[in-house]
Length: 439
Image (tube, rainbow, N blue to C red; front, side):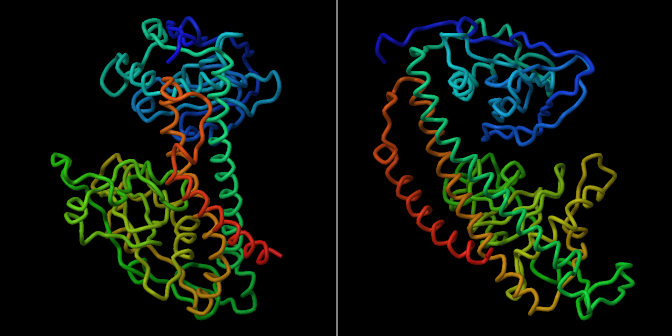
């Protein structure tokens, strides 16, 4: 690192909880903690709410850093960029607001600095308070020393990392649209029964009309039900990089699980050999955070908080995924076992959940109709995973000065660049067939 990089106290070059004016009673943008995902630069949702005088206040180009456990450890951090000009929003008191100092630090660089392990690890180690409610205090940043490049180089670093996040966000938005299309087709066929209006008959079990010949059956009758398990964590040899090990955080806002925070070794996989899930298994979270639904994209395992369906050969996994997500997930949070405060839907209860099963001919037609949509979603999610890996590998190198701002991604990450090229070629083909179908 050359002499242009200078050492500062964090609080000397970054504004912490800057003054933002918002009158009580104002209906203003509001961001809650659960609207923040660890790997997303933008919040999932910005709602509007009356400001009553409490909470962190922010405007565009501010960074929100979660200061409470476990949100801080999970890396919940977002950059604000979607407010109207001059608009001030607010959020939880569990956010610290950070932004650049004029002419000294670039606001987007500050966001990436907050994602840097040296800053995050310091904040985590500085947490105080009772167990389970620990927080990092604003004053802690007076004791953190960081090295910062000139602002022109900060902007170049932010531009490199930002371009990767821009592509990631674009893929998320594309998938949001694609899934909405799939959901609309599902609703038209299997909720409103529009193509089958002349075949409806009253079903006493459901108390409504459904197409003649369709049956009501339990999930256990359409496939094999698997409840996951965790290999002993005391034996680190159970964990490695060979197999995806799906836990509830890996399922948030995903159609397919293409990557997991924790992976299993061959030894760990062998310990769970009878619980292996093939591609296109439907995973459903059934303990604590109940009702998340996602598909596997490769051979995977899950922990004990997830029940999964491996569909029979003639049953469309896309239909089952959409049925569970639309018709079952919204109401299974009411299930519980053993009087526990924590919502639990055990394997027996899950297996008995009812599903409407159309004729196999209709299922096959539906599967063929939406297969290209799910293929496009999968390609986008695979690309997101690789882009995140590149970004997360580049970030510490750029922020430490290990590599300078002129980065050749193909040279620095040749394997990932090749995979991205292959995915892009695949996406061009898929988009062609999807465009043809949409017409």
